[in-house]
Length: 471
Image 1 (cartoon, helix red, strand yellow):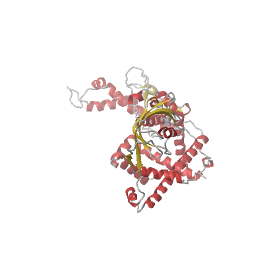
Image 2 (cartoon, one colour; image 1 turned 135 degrees about the vertical axis):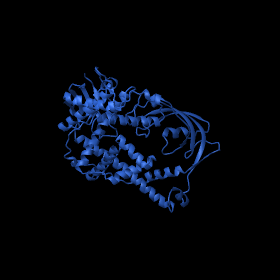
Image 3 (cartoon, helix red, strand yellow; image 1 turned 30 degrees about the horizontal axis):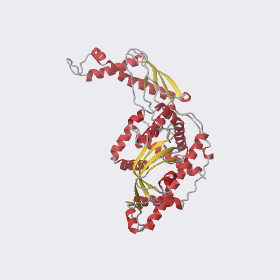
Image 4 (tube, one colour; image 1 turned 60 degrees about the horizontal axis):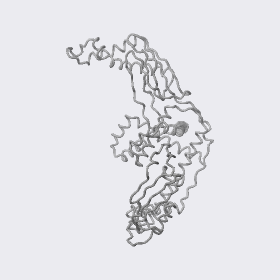
């Protein structure tokens, strides 16, 4: 009898945050079972043929049947006295399943040890023959980790960014804080909007180019075809962060006036679905308002934290803003360094890792769309085959980066101590409001502990390599 089945890989997946695939067995007697085998990278695909003699197979069947005889509860028979023939007929599938899971897994792992092989994908079993009294035979196909050399990695260099917080950047940080504590009051005077006023508007926008879709994560954003609507939205007339089209349209307008105009969004606009787009807006002005900022004094400083005066708060704010800018600029430099490493070291990557990374990226993209308001019914209409293909190049690079970082960690002898790991788990426990031991137990079951440690190690490796190679 020939079968095709899946066997969970005995090795844990070192890439991204995906647990080993669920184990499925097919136990249909006297039938050919065909499953859709996952893609594999031919350069990393290995195949082994496994055999066990008929005596070992029969012994395994007898051991399982004896256990069923002891445990089975069948009316008319005393416990432990169920005939073997009845067990074979009544529990044939269950018995065969246990023999399959035990004997096949044992022989497979033995063959891996003998061949010094370690699968990183879920092995596919084909031509499986398992029948009491006959030899066991099957072929297993799987992917292995690529072998590659990173000699010369320390020849790569990247420019260390100069971090200077400008006055404009600091002012933007301070304005953000002050705005959070501001008060807004309605201007009752019947007059047109002027610079410095805040217009409370209701709007509806229609994309001028809805056929063009896409997002930062490569996820098709069908919400581009949906109207962009808002109610009771405050916009500063003449504000530096207000689009020029809105400034021009609102300046001089009055309460109750209806406006229609088009707004061109810059390519670098923060909202991906609007970046580089043109939107036709219908806007109604509902009110003219004035925003009052808090006094910059010691009393206000105490509301912001344990500060003696506003000057102390400003000093701390400037320091924190500079640290954020430094982290952002160094993050970009680290990305540039990784890109150079990916370009320098060429090697094949397991397709199973790539597919897992694609799924992770797709999941993040869908979560982002859900946060933007896309409904589940809309998501089901997406072309997922095209979305996955759009993620592929970036997913391949991310897998390569992870594997290179793992190699670099070995070369630089970088490890995460138990104290550091426990501290990270404690932070996760506090953030998730989940008891530490409950969190640890849950992560241990789904492989999360291994993934968190690996991610911590990669992040540290990236920092160590950056400090070593940046100039």
